[in-house]
Length: 126
Image (cartoon, rainbow, N blue to C red; front, side, top):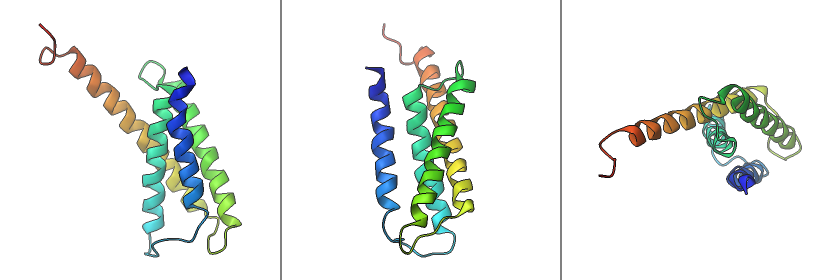
């Protein structure tokens, strides 16, 4: 049952693959790097959710999230090499890694926020 947490990341990986299989939608200088950071930050967030990354297991689970996200980025860049009108770009891979790390950090901040809310007296039941 714990593997159910991986379903959103798996579906999102499919969406990334689908989007990179077609032509570029917007051809504005630098937009593709921003798009890579945004889409991979979402993937990083979903991977952190799937692996239940927390401050207690950060070293191990964050590494797994980064490795999986990096591998996804490499596969996506190789895939784009074979798509007409697309190309393989190392800078895109850097943007992917930046996005993965950002998504993991957002996940950790939300986990911390929920811990604070849960421990505060404001929301406690009387």
